[in-house]
Image 1: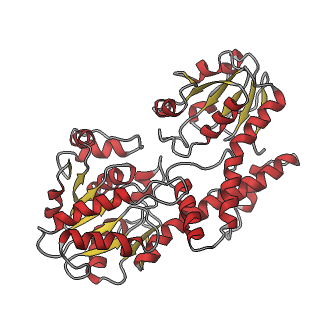
Image 2: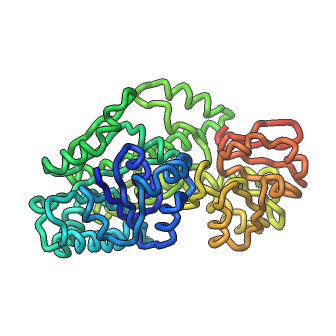
Image 3: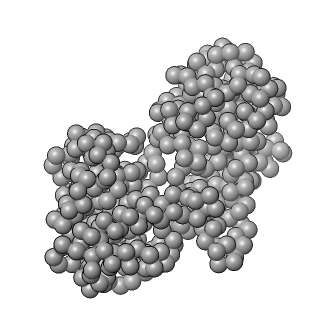
Length: 434
């Protein structure tokens, strides 16, 4: 199939490259000329395992990029994969997606025959019908459902595993309100995934509103599961109980399941915080008080501060050099959105600490824009050298290999938020939830 993808961020770029890997001819459309140039040169514009190889393999062949929306005229369907950032009140800002839809609509005015527009961006129930479809109709002069179709196809890709998540999905959600032509195109598009010998993907055919809500429900439920195990693990810590043994046991219950039971410094990223805040804001707009969702966020935001509290049980941080290891919100990405390190840095600076930080990716460059007073170094050893304490915020594998580096600390106190560092003689080790 011929596919166009509007928006070349984390989602759009990975979707475009993976669709090309499945054998489709894909054109990525973005207003950023630098991103377009990098994709056409076979370079990945984002840090994501497995993505650079696919872009390098398919660029100039089944994958190309352009700033010209007219490229979608030669395609069968268009994915809209643009950001929906949070406002200060937690609600989502739809302006970028609306602008993208207007560009798509204006181009569709020249399109002959049926064309499917697929909303890959995360939008709340009702927004597609009430805000996006009217923009498409006005800009194109055509009628939705007759001259073009609109579907919601949410993504369930985690940063750091986005490629594998796309290529091995557990479900494919097609929100169409029963549009037979849209369903046919989506089934043909994803058929290579469904037909894999070891395929596990279940196809869920549903409505536009339901398709939108499934995305939010999925992420918020996982966020709640993580905050629940963190709350349980915090109590375990107070009673001297190893929460990881508890998690392993309750994960054997098929009603609970083992994934997302790893307690620690909390969840972050671009999806969980944004989607949880958006659903809380949406609930309040309907005058519903989302008590449980509020608690989910409260528990999550408390975890990094607890780490600083534990550190102060062993050493006074005021005026002292304190190392923060890990700035990306999770391994295998340089994304600092929702990073738990931010709250830890803020708590340390509020208590007068001199923060020195390290991350193995460009996350340090991103963090420096927001926290300029932090000293950023090029290795974990440099961060630990002369430090009076250390917080381990991200479970990068290289942190598990740290050993002699701790000997260079002025006061070898390590508070581990990810259970990645081994207890050893010569350091005071404190686990966040164990």
